[in-house]
Structure formats: C-alpha cells, structure tokens
Image (cartoon, rainbow over all chains, first blue to last red; front, side, top):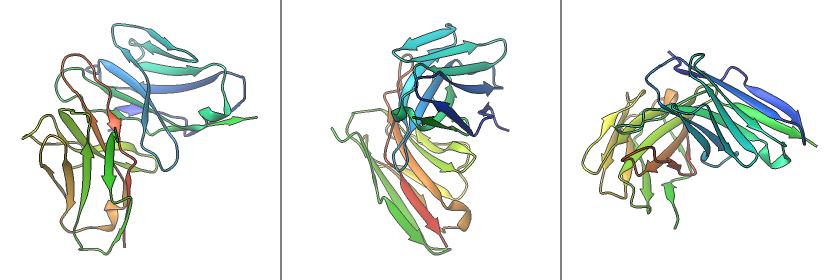
Length: 113
Length: 114
C-alpha cells in the first residue's frame, strides 16, 4: 500500500525552463509534506516543506503547491539549472509524535543544457 | 559539525552472516531513524527511536534489530543476512518536538548480500 506516490520515474527539462514534479498521497492524516533532493552516493537533503494549513510555500527558485482536496502536491523549479539534476523525493508526515517520514518512489530530474 | 555519520560505507556479506551498521549524530537530536532505499521503492522506515531509551518498528522491521546506545548513537543489526536485505541504508536524525523538525540524513551504507 503505497501511501505516497510519484508516478513519473524520470523527467527531462531544458535549462532555464520550469521543472514540475508531482506527488500524490492517500492518507488524509498527513499534515506535513516535504521534498528532499538526492545526489548519487549521498544522503537525501531537505529542500522545502509545506504544512497542510497552507496551499503554497516558496523558497527562491523552489515553490511547493498543496491541493488537499485532491491529495496532491507539486514542486516547481524556476528557472531550472544543471545543478538541479538529481532524484527528488516527496515525503509526508504527521507533525505530532515521532515524525516518521513516508516517502514516494522518487523522480529523477535531468536538466539539459 | 560532522552531522550524521555512518559506518561502513560499503559492505559485502554472505547469506547468514551478521553485521551491525553504526550511526552517530552530533546535533544533539532526540530522534533517530533507519531507512532502506531500494530501486522503485523510495526510502522505507525500518526502525526509529523517538528519544533516548525508546525504539519502535517502522514499515519494514523484519530481519533487523536496533539499539539506541545513547543520545548520539543508533545502530542497526542484521542477525542473519539475506539477499533481500541488499540495499542502501540511511540513518537520519531530527529534533522532533513541537512543530515539524527537519530530518538530516547520513551518506548511506551500501550493503550487498550474496
């Protein structure tokens, strides 16, 4: 039972354009959502997050949108840069308690020059 | 600050062998976690420790044991390794308390079981 799903295993975008990564979840108890970025042979690093009381959070080139009724979130990267090439994981959690993360399968983003 | 460190970086085991993966954090975090990453599966939680002295099962605990040795260290033990445990293992820590606190990940241990 995959509670967090990233249906696109890979995405290729031209440098300077917008990258949009999508994520769906099934558990309505999740109240915090995160994106992590992972380079090869490294651990995931936190990128941006959003609480369920918001529908948008922005940090520089990165914006996360949350549609609670659709149980869907997306990460927008504008403009895309070659250094953004990595695997992006969507994750969900409950704020209270141990804050265990449930991850999606990941999307490999490739930015082409 | 080293953040979260993991040893070893790589390990090859034969079926039935045992080993312990070590994890330490120097951020004074209360909570620590062990995940495994498999192709097409994302990261899945094996065990976690919400605070020193407590441990609980995650999504995929079978075949593993953990020890929260002190606030800094959280080890993962495979008593009798199986090929299905071939994976990349990540340790993470966070200062879980009021509100959300970011989880910091170590660099991972790549384990192959033959």
